[in-house]
Length: 587
Image (cartoon, rainbow, N blue to C red):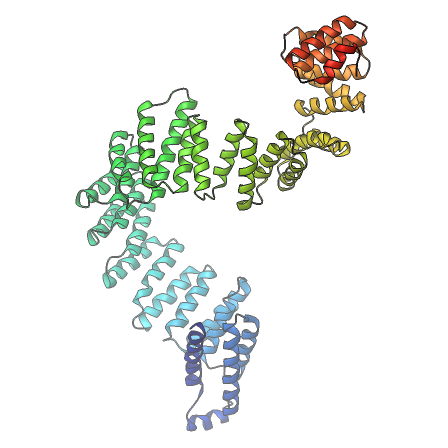
């Protein structure tokens, strides 16, 4: 069908071209004497015109232009070919081409001042050159010269608006309405102009005139009411919506809009009345209802953050939500907004259920997956995190956060190979987020250490600290693992000292510092640090074991054994402790 359509255009233009080109026998004789095109030239021009039109249809505009220009050389008095040259040049965004196009279309109009299409193209070209005055003049001339072109009054009015001649635009719209009747386009544009001019009374009258002409058109009512609201005419917007509902009680979308107006006007009870009706109306789009729940959820969240929550509002919101979920049990977005509602109220268990249901119902919202994984991480549900992040990556293969959750969970499950792969992917996809890359490198340092790939471990830690040299958790882990390996101990001591200087009451950090000192044979300093730790009666068996090791090195074997026994009482599975106690020696 498309081929036939293009063919019809070609033959139509060809007819214009040939009709304007072929003279009568007497004229041919006369023109030959005056240097006019010969019959051979006209046939040649016809051939080039067909070729040019073919390339034009194929959007090979460079070749089309060459052929059309050849036609104009052979037959310069043909308006159609000048029109086609202008049309080709107008496809360009370059000003120099548009200027050439304007010259060609001007030539076409001189040769054929009654051709509607010539005027329309000319107006378009001058508009693109931002010569709106000329563009408007061309349309005005067309409507005088060419019968049946009044429909372009709307285009003329639009040009006047571009040219900031709003009074002229109003006149054009008025003339169009007088000829073709009141319609949405002219009415809305006139309203916009009047509001911009500060003529609120006239703008409202225009809107009312449209509603009077189309009293049953709900879309016009809603558009007018929303416009009034944006123009800070909220009481009038409410009046317009109320009047329509009075005669159209089933207008659910208008009721939804009106409920929003009442909320904006702090008339919550009136808003709730209409919302109760709307939520039981299956003809109102579910997305509008979801937005309402989301708005109330945000309000409740803000109230909770401020230290108080309106229990009546909370009850009303949940009533609407239960109604919504019962009506649309398979709609993922319904469950997502439910998850958001519960999450904002810190009811994480219920929030997790809703996000999981949304995903099971086919949600493609990345936020739903991310929130689910976050809640699962809060509950240490690492198997679920692996499962759901794997599923999420099938839909969002380039989301770094999904790889991060996946790697984090695998690491907690001691799946180090899988953890390293996922976190490396997360790092690759987060290259522009240096903070996140630093955190990922910290995790990779731990994982590669567990895999005994110490070179990669050290590189990861160093990269993390290059971004944030005061990341105390990474400094602590890095120094501890270096101490266990008995490598780069001066560096380990320097890092551990920095950590405890800024965290003097953190037992884990103090234990690491003591252990680094122990590996450097600084037993007395290590003992002093560990005495502070043990004095707080910790429940971590490692602290007592380390303290015992330090005491042993200082020659206090009996006290060392007592500390090992305390460690044993807190961790009965440590076989190495058994050997230390039984043999009273270090291993």
